[in-house]
Image (tube, rainbow, N blue to C red; front, side, top):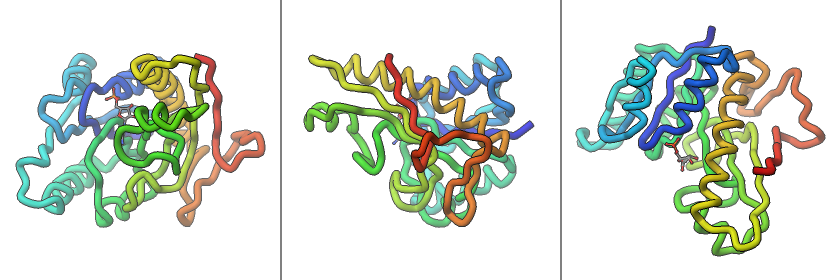
Length: 216
Ligand code: GAR
């Protein structure tokens, strides 16, 4: 069974979706540790509710970004996970740590990348009157939200869509798609080879990556 470490910074609703999928055996893996850079992250409470070990590595306690990342890297080395999932982890990671874990670190981002890397993606979708919004799951590289794409989940924007409702719908699809992709990675049906995402036993329906539309 694959060993998964989840990195969080906040609410941890995606962490909980992953935990529940592991418990329901919908993921062929097990969360061995949760790491938060934020001591007040509610996700830490969620981890403890399920008796999952957690550690706070507070970036504010380090004098430089590289010191924080070295500490994170040492702890990850010690855990020796098969997969590291950034699920609402709000720190940008630099080249040393992302290169080291490039074939085993994935990130969830709330936009249809390459559109809207960075913050405030939902606001940008509404401002620009985009007809669609969605989420991306990708391998992490040193460039922000730009590593090799694995999968995207898409929703149509409703007429008179509110920001609040749209964020709720985005969360719903995150909670469906992220555990599914984690399971495929645990089953080695998705992997990174020479910086290219490879798929086995998965029908891409003529897309270059997994694309799923949701009516939610
Ligand atoms: C999720 O919507 C995730 O896509 C986003 O943070 C939220 C975390 O929610 N991630 C990013 O913006 C990363 N750049 P959660 O803490 O309830 O899982």
